Length: 172
Ligand SMILES: *[C@@H]1O[C@H](CO)[C@@H](O)[C@H](O)[C@H]1NC(C)=O
Ligand SMILES: *[C@@H]1O[C@H](CO)[C@@H](O)[C@H](O)[C@H]1NC(C)=O
Image (cartoon, rainbow, N blue to C red; front, side, top):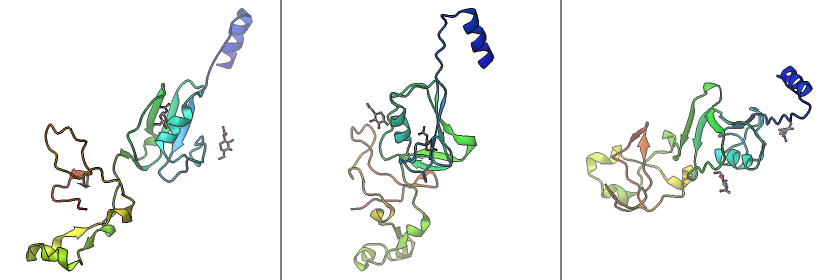
């Protein structure tokens, strides 16, 4: 590449070669947005931050390299820069979701007697609850009735092993 550029320049002294290099930004759920993300060892934390940092930058193609784990989006991702490739770094297992995984250890038996009294006796031992603020979930959307053709944005939903958990209820 270098020899080609020199050759062109020597053939035509007026030729201007403008090349912007590719950029690789590394993003990991365990990273920090205080990092500049140019090295896989010191990744940024959020895809949003990586995109925002490309604004006004000079590059040919920007690769946002996602490191393994769940990249949970706090808000809808706006991609407002061009020539960007968002991909898994070295085919690592990467999940980009609008949700937040909750480990099974957070699901507890019900101990509140008033709540237990409302459940059929044979169901009481089988119901589990999770207190959402304990797992960092505080934005529940608006809990309301909605169905087909509803104009309302979807409320918070629960998925179990990737499938909608129809027997789950979010209660205030
Ligand atoms: C990015 O941060 C690293 C240290 O984490 C530093 O070595 C490197 O020079 C920085 N790169 C830029 C372009 O600022
Ligand atoms: C561009 O998108 C990024 C990431 O989604 C966001 O942080 C930034 O505010 C947006 N900038 C503009 C000018 O819309």
